Length: 111
Image (spheres, one colour):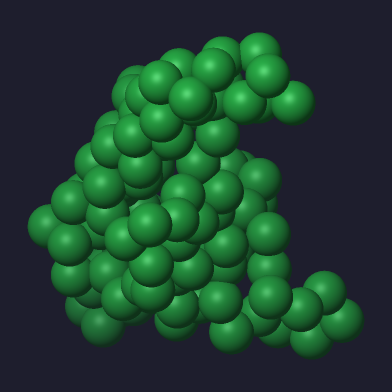
């Protein structure tokens, strides 16, 4: 259907655009030292659950690798409707969450 709608050049451009947004997401994760897995030819990223709060993951509607027990990985599928603003907001939300967690731990230590 995509090939019929966009033609081969349009389909290639669409895929290249998705892979570019996925690369942008991974660059943000790299800057934070977040562990993830990604095949460079796919628009899917799996983030190690230990590096991501469940609150952030659920806030961005990430998919857990398993639903009946705590996840090991959270999956992200970068799609057409995911804009660059959201791609940039995700790592910022992780950084904010980590900073808040560190602040809470510091408050507990000094109490």
